[in-house]
Length: 417
Image (tube, rainbow, N blue to C red; front, side, top):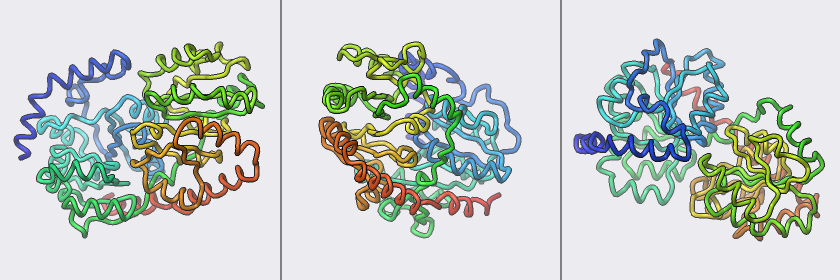
């Protein structure tokens, strides 16, 4: 079956290039470094101890504490990503401490060249990236493979079961699979992963690194719009969520005059359209990229930047995490939790069930049905500081209780280093 899969991948090559070019209309970075995805012009790297594949921004953030720990142990780390946002996070955070490129497309010849040039001692694939040729060629190159922080949702398993004949051999090629929780472990075994290779080590996202880069930059930003203003950040928002929030933001302004809303769209190609939407709704709007547009007169500021969410949480008073009022599945809430601010989310969070179940159990997160409830929830907490502090304390305790997954992963990886 892998032969026919590979044949389809080769036949799709022109469409893959066209797709990158098309996506590059809104985000030009998709048109850069296309050759990397085919392993063309990539130099041999010499000695690589650990190869880490983190598909996009969320996976890079999750892998960061693990990579930090490996670097502290003087390991040579090479990181692959698939999206420009993930790539930018790697470059901004790690700089020249790691090697980095886009992951090669899943074609036999291409991934064979990848392992020939990188020669890693061990490979770590974050979450659920099951590429048949990539994993097959890793086995042929005798690279032990770990599926780390592995997760699989109820919806995903239904889709994978339809192609179980292709997925089961892939899962069997992993040296170990480390799911985030017991439910994830059961799903992987149900798909055909050998039970003796599946061990629940916890969720590395709880071990996040909260060291803020250039804190003075963010404090200066806060001063520029008014240090005493209450600030709401709507982070990782998707299409239509900004419209829902802006439609009722005046409710919040009426109750809490001079409040400021920061909006950080999940995808960079939407920065300008969200900015135009805010202007159209009648709000005085600034742009993070244009410091001259940020002043105490602004009501909304669009965060058209990458890799700054942690710092923005630090200077905010409330956080709404997007992808949750629309059927996307939510995003990671733990960076906001770590910055000790109350967190709100819609109820579409199936991609992060394990994290949300812990927070729900301790009543440490505000779940809302709509944007109106978001506004009312902020008003309620602002008028009841005791409840606000209780929420923050409970969430912080959940974060602390679940830490330690990175250390458990590192102990296993050491066997191959």
